[in-house]
Image (cartoon, rainbow, N blue to C red; front, side, top):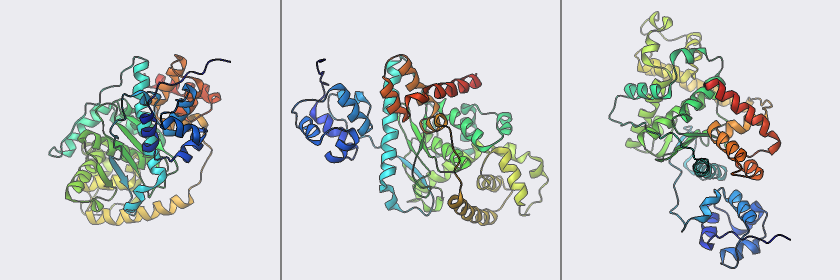
Length: 396
C-alpha cells in the first residue's frame, strides 16, 4: 500500500478556514465527507489530513488549496462590499444563507483564479479605470465606454438581450474583472454585488434577473469598482442609507445609463428629433429605442429624462408600471432547458472557466479539481472547451 502523505498545514489554518466558511464541525464533516473525529483531531493539532483529504476540505470551505499553506490565518477579507437590491428587500435579508454562500464562493473563485494564473505564468490585465464623484458622469461614461471597446455599430447589431449581456460581460472581463453569476437567490434579495480589490476585482450578477437587468447591474457595479467605493446600495436611489450613499448610487446609475445609452447618440435618433417637447412617449417608441440600445425600458426612459426629453413625472409613472409588470412576469416565468456547458460558462465566466481548463490541460490541477472548481462533471469538458474556443475565435 502506498505511503500516506500528510499535508503540512497548521491546525490554526484549518480552524480559520472552517470558521470563515461559517461551518460547524458537523456541517464541515458532512460537506467534506470526512468524519467529525478526524476534523476535530486535526484542528487540535493531533495529526494532519492527507493531501486528498485537504482537497476535500478546500472544496467544502470554498478556499483555494494554497490558502491552507499560509504562514498564519489572514485577517478576514470583507467581500460584502456592494449590493444592488430591489426597494422591497429588507435589511435582514442580507443574512440570507444562500447569499452568504455565494459571496464566499465569489471570493474563493477570485483567490483561485489568481493562484492558477500564477501557476500558468499568466497575468490578469490590471484594472486601471478610476473615477471620482466630482467628475461629470457623462465624461466618466465616455471614458468607460472607450475602455470597454464596445462601438455604436456593434451595439446596434445585437439581435437579442442575451447577446448584449454576453458582449458587455466579456468587455468587462477584458478589463481584468471577473464576472460571475449567482444561483438560487431570489431577485428581491439581491441584484448584484462587487468586490473591490487592487488585483482582480469581482462583479457578481443574479442569474435570476432579466438579461437587460443584469446588463445594467454589471455596468453599475463596474462604476463602483472605478470609484473604489463599497457599501449597501439599492435599485431605488431614494432607499440609500444616507446622503453619501445616495450620492454614490445616483452617480453610478447615471454613469451606467450613459455608457449604455450615450446622450449624444440618443439625441440624434430620428424618433427623438421628431418628438414634440412636453408630450408623453408612446410605449411603441420606448420599446423601439430600448431594443435598439439593448437596454430595459426603464433605463431608456431615464436616459430621456437626463437629456431633457422626458419628465420626472413620466418616469415615475412608467417605473411603477414596469416594476409591477416585472413582478407579475417573474412569478409566471417559464424555464427552458439550457445546455450544461452554457450553464457552466454563464455561472463561472469565460475568463475563470478558461483558466481552469488550461490548468487541467497543463496538468497543474486534476480532473477532480476541474470538476470541483467549475461545478461540472468531467464528461462535459469537450463541450465547454468548444464553446470557449468559439468565443475566442469570435473575439479575434
